Amino acid sequence: MSLIDLYVTEVGKRLPLKGRSDIEAELRSTLEDMLEDRAQKAGRPADEAMMLDLLKEYGPPDKVAATYNPYQYLIGPAMYPFFVRVLKIVLSVLSIVLLVTLGIKLGRQPLGGLELAQAIGTGLLGILGAGLQAFGNIALVFAILERVMPASEFKIDEEKKEWDPASLKKAAAPTEVKPWEPITNILFTVAAMVVLNGYSNVIAMYFFKDGAWQSVPVLTEAFFRWLPLMNVQWALQIVLNVILLRQGRWQTGTRVFSIATSLLGIFIGYMLLTGAPIVSLSTEALLASGAADAAQAQNINAVLQQAVRLGILMAILAQAADVVKNAVRLVLKSR
Amino acid sequence: MANTENLDNMVQELRRGLLVLAVLSQLGKQQYGYALLKLLADRGMEIDQGTLYPLLRRLEGQGLLESNWNVEAGRPRRYYVISSEGRKLLPRLKGEWATMVTAMDGMLK
Image 1 (cartoon, each protein chain N blue to C red):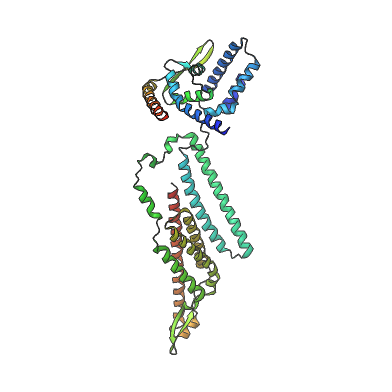
Image 2 (cartoon, rainbow over the protein chains, first blue to last red; image 1 turned 60 degrees about the vertical axis):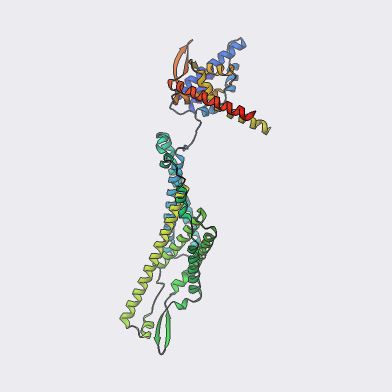
């Protein structure tokens, strides 16, 4: 094999199979023409030194092959926006599902201190691993599609439509924040924090006896165990609402922040729902009030606990809806 | 040094934009790659072979050139010639070029 043949083979190895033999044949013919030209100019037959000079001038095989593959993409520009969109949707949904699953799992195991931190760390690492795996799988699928399907099939619909500047107004609407919304949220959150932290005894059953109003607190120890974490979530919500008030609109950062606080809220709600009752009216207190007999007292307590559970469940659903709403808006914004 | 490099890049960009017109204008008669390379160089348009051959393939893919293999003096060569589609496009491209030259001349006076 001549040096030219070896060179052509090296270039060919770096070319796509489609059209390879054609390019190889043309390259060989060009190099032979060039060599012949040089031999004529030098007035002597072509030799190995001349061939070496020619090939050195023509360039390394990888660079020559690269000129025939100007777009050496794993995922090409036509398919890339579609890839990013799919990636964002999958990673958002996966993160939310895994975070909620982690919260539920942690809630089922009463852990404390270091053990809890370790469990959270392991769980977050697992989520990171799952995210990377999902990323790799999606990239692999798109890399295969890039090679087996024409890029034209992946043109995103709106690219074909005529762009309407009026759509800017429509797109801007969901991001606007009216000032009364964060102000109301802040007021209610602060009120809840003040009452539950400073005046929790006002949440009680009241009855009139012996010429005076008397009360029996209904919040149990289980509620106060979770109060510090609730305070953290409320504080985060206040920070979020202050930011929204200042910025006047939702942005990527505030949406992510909101999702995080809602997930914390869902976690707390789940713990309250599945743990020991957070409200309780003791039979003794009810009997002492004279408002009910023993059988009625049990029923009242059961109804109260069910009502509170229903309230917590609705709060969880509301926060879950908030997470979904913010995640969807994040994805839509990224389009 | 940086200025020379910038100038080289800018000149390269300018030339790159002209290559299609230069190649189409010279392929009224069929040529094989290396002969076209020399022809363009003789006319003052030096093109690197690493640029010319992929460009020829791209233009053929776009239907502006046609090619066929011929064996000449025992050596197979791929000959390129402008296609009927290319012939329709060339005068319009020349017109665009003339407009640009006039506009640029006006700006650079």
